[in-house]
Amino acid sequence: MAERANGIILDTNVVVAHLRGSVDLQTLASPDEPLFLALIALGELYRGVLKSARPESNRAKVDEFLEIAAVLYPDVATAEIYAQIAQALDTKGTPIPEKDLWIAAVALECDMPLATRDDHLTSRNARYPLVVKEAFKSRGSQVA
Image 1 (cartoon, one colour):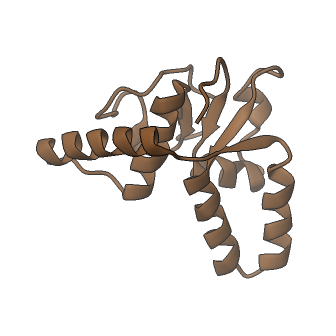
Image 2 (tube, rainbow, N blue to C red):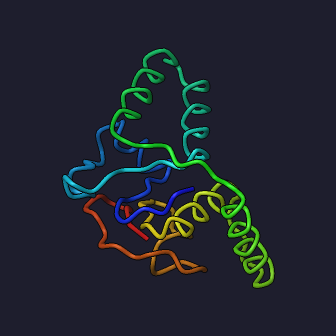
């Protein structure tokens, strides 16, 4: 995975909130700041589409979203970071969901902030060092 000079990685819950109209990505990133989505988050979005009452409509929304966000693919380096985070959290007795570990590993590998609504990933509750960026204005939303 190539290193990025700038940009922000979006967690699944931020994309869902955006698609539902409760998060404006314009307030999250500057116009010249690219948006990224970890492949793992895209899988979560597609799973949500299949579980929804309107899969065709929701798939179209996800596909349209992919026109403004590039997908980041995990690689060997991502797997090494994932393993380090998972082991550290297991040792502390504070595990977090597996998918969140993978998304965090992508953010750490790329040295980019992660926009999330998950308390266990926000800067005040983070159990591992994610890059911090100012919080955006949505209830419960943080950039960690």
